[in-house]
Length: 244
Image 1 (cartoon, rainbow, N blue to C red):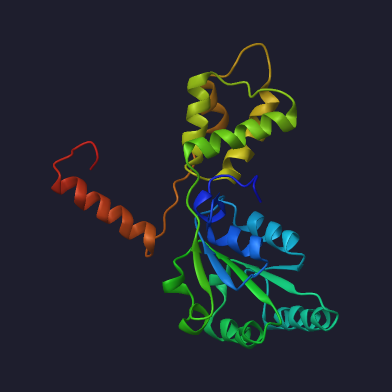
Image 2 (cartoon, helix red, strand yellow):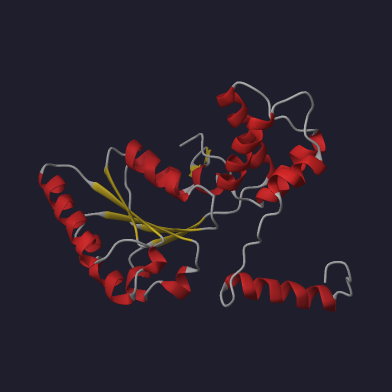
């Protein structure tokens, strides 16, 4: 867990003050929680590591493909594990895709301890999850990866590959800027760029030809929309033409 980058507020170990996820690991006292954050910030990775480091059986599922029948199978396996003295960490990705009835379906299993639920969502839980579920789960917010975290990921990738990325300094900064806080996107782009090792390092013009342009994250009705509208209003009020 110490190798996870960019979420120091959750994983830090600074004397007696522990980040919430670090505290769960140190005390071996996991409780159900929802991880809310943009793509590529480590939600699935953290869930995997939590199960491993607390010696729980890991049951992953995506709400995109699953239904109530799949949930029942998970809970039945969890009951058997519990009878054998083993706990189960039930990781539900894209939890906001479940409707209210589906969310209500696993509340009893959270309450009686059959599973510890770790949900992951890119949507605001206050809008997408029902109040009964929210009252039983802590909300933990993951942040987009900052530049130093993205640089650390690139260094890890170079160590893994045994060679440097073929980029000029300016192009390397541009790669991190294109990732926009998304570690998964950054590593996917790095994997592509490793194939371009040649006579010279790639500059920004080369990078634009290879990577094109990333589509910006945006939705039509939720947080991204209102955040952008608010930013526009503030820039206009501040008479900042370039920002507007």
